[in-house]
Length: 314
Image 1 (cartoon, helix red, strand yellow):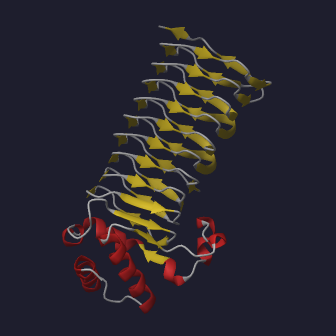
Image 2: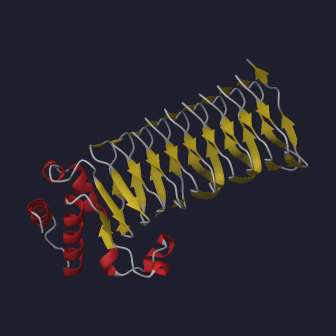
């Protein structure tokens, strides 16, 4: 082990005095990888055994305690030994609630294809948060401030993601993410500010309500090739949203209502080849929307549902 790895490991040993032999080996591997600035990979050589949905069957050597990461992010002596690029863990199951609310975290956090339980980051400042390909139960991050947020590349949440009043000084990337909380709120981002793009595209899928009312997106809200499912209810609730550039719903499928009344769009509203299903109800509500450019509605398929499209171009 390098000097910093050994220092971090010994510091951890003084904090966590009852590690089992398996935990000790995992923590030593973690310390070594982090201080070297490398991906700490706990994945199996058999790719069939790396799906986070099946993490309960993973071996003990892939189980890491959430308290270890809380300590790594909050202990001044530990932070001093972690490189500025932060830590990047792959293929591990994080056991326990990751409680880092009201905390200033000066390093990027990356969990790739990991399994996590409940994550709490309310009113925290995080340099970057990346959960690409990971599976979680819930994410409570109201008021979080971060440079970028990645819930993409097969990310799955089986409860609610809450980003009310969050500030993302870059992109919110949920490309191919799956947010599942049927008949409830699946993704709640009321009043969020994203200075860059919000990517909800290319396999992005919700089962439950997706909320962006009063949100301020600096560039595009890109929902191309996605699915929004909240049968006979609001699939996307985005009243009064402000978009610096364009909204793309092209080639998406919607089961429920898309609501964007009062939206302010700096570019296009593009719904080309979008498929709506909300029998007997309004499928697309865009009353009072103002757009600086074009509205594309060609190729829309609407199954026994209405469109409220009192738009205003400026």
